[in-house]
Length: 106
Image (cartoon, rainbow, N blue to C red):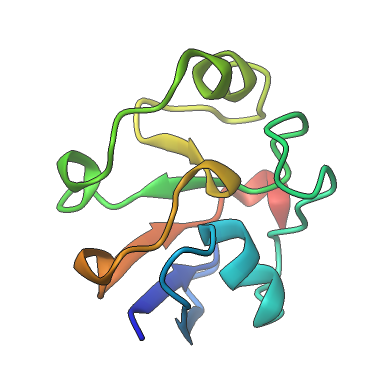
C-alpha cells in the first residue's frame, strides 16, 4: 500500500496508507486528515479537497483535465502546484507522495 504524506499548513504531518486505485481525497477522508472534506464526493465540483503537490512529485502525476483546472481556479489560494485530491488516483508509483493542505482549509 502506498504511503501518502499530508502536511497541514501548521506543519503537522499525517502519513496514511492508501489503496491503489482510490483517489487522494478518499485516502485523506478514510484516514480523517483534517482539512480534506470532499463535499462533492469526488465529482470535481467543489474544491474542498484542494492540495498543493510537492515540487518533487508534480511531474509524476498525470496533468489535470480541463474540468479540474477550471475548478482549481475557483479554489481559495490556488497556485501552480494546486490539484484537486479527488482527481488524483493513487498508484503504487505514488508511494511517498507529499501534499500540503492550504491554510484556507484548516
